Length: 154
Ligand SMILES: [Zn+2]
Image 1 (tube, rainbow, N blue to C red):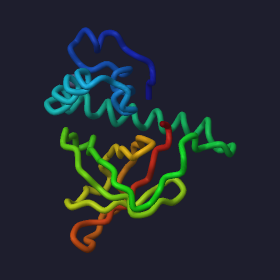
Image 2: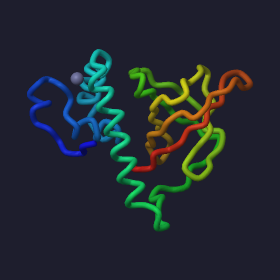
Image 3: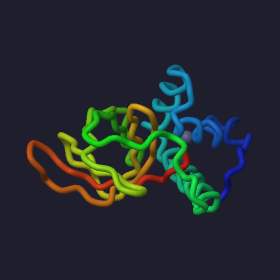
């Protein structure tokens, strides 16, 4: 597992690790996001790298954490609207969702479409952006409820 940036990948026409990290963290301009999403939509290798980058950041966050002051952002509110994007399997679609409840390290969402267990997702809420993976998804009233484990590095 490598967290360093590799310039040969940049030259080979793939997205480099640094940009994948910024993409995960939602810290790129709209133009860069469009370029990366166009590439991810047709390059499974870079989607794999995106998944690896997420694991890497999550692992480092776990190493750094554990000593109390985990959450820098305001506590997540329940029953708030949010948006969700599935990063693996990659899709550029953004869904409007509802956060049903929040627990330590996780949340439950309400979506109109089912989410695939084990998919990597990114949720944008009022005060924060979080990546996570889908633990389960079950039918609920007028849609689906999914449990998401947050990776907590943002
Ligand atoms: Zn690529």
